[in-house]
Image (cartoon, rainbow, N blue to C red; front, side):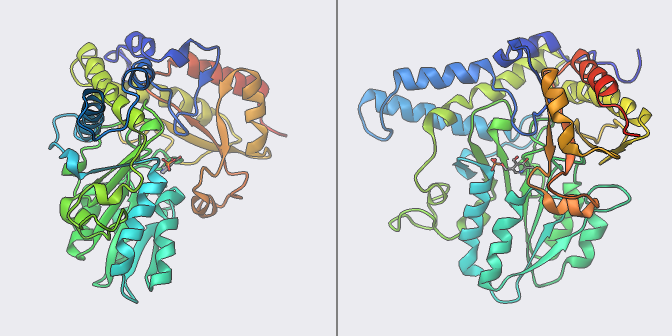
Length: 412
Ligand SMILES: Cc1ncc(COP(=O)(O)O)c(C=O)c1O
């Protein structure tokens, strides 16, 4: 058995849980949005059919709707601590429509405390969701310092953060994994550096959460957000905050709420109840997958994803015209988000060919235009991105390779 064996993951079971996989399409744009679980879809319909009322009243259907929404918040907290990690208190989980909106809320909550000269570190790698809100704090006197991409490792390195930190640093914002490079950030080292500087750490977990256990309570973060629609769920998002970090944020809700009203003071207009209630299906699925896959779902997912990445990276390695943006090795630390450019061929010219073949992939800057510039690319044409999920198969990757090999030949 070679070291890329997919033994472990019960792929048939995994695939049986996603109705979208019955389609003719092969979905390889999972970092854009994953397929939803069938159980998530059913749960949304069930909630809307049986509990079509507003929460918070004493009559039975309203009370039951409230219980289901509370269970959804608790399930999201469970998802954030799966794999035997320290559990997350559901009262420290803020819910919203998207990660972008949640980070913007945190930024608005921090704004009144910003003093001229306070410094905020953002990265040249992140999706703008974890960059733009902090840039807007310049209006309040904050100074932005940019943590560069390390051009040797094509990842964010703690040693490049260190010289940016000082006693003026208030906040460090970085991604847990790049949605383009597939690289994973060493949060342990970064959290130690950030704490030593007396600053807070805000992490974008969106690209990481579909692949590995988030373990947010053990990661030394102050804020950590991810989007459920990329983790097999509905279109909503959640942000974990350390209780004291949440408490110090300015109230973003009605003025009669106190600063201690966490997480409600950060949930103006609440959130889509039926979507949050449906989130219970996600950790249930991961647990069931673990039981069928040798006990540890995330270990089985990682091994399978490594096999998928290895097949594609090996193929790209044989193409003289391909430049892989990220590690060319399918090692344990790499996520199956594989981006590349082809010399002499615009990235935009590839998806029309794969579309024809029924393969869903994408090109562009993926809202990380600064990363494109750091890589020496023209942001609008960006990269071709193949983003795989654990429910993809080696056969699907083989179909993609066939199409690239026969229909996207190296330009002369
Ligand atoms: C890495 C990363 N961060 C943040 C976001 C923004 O998430 P949302 O759409 O929930 O605002 C995305 C969306 O593509 C992303 O890929």
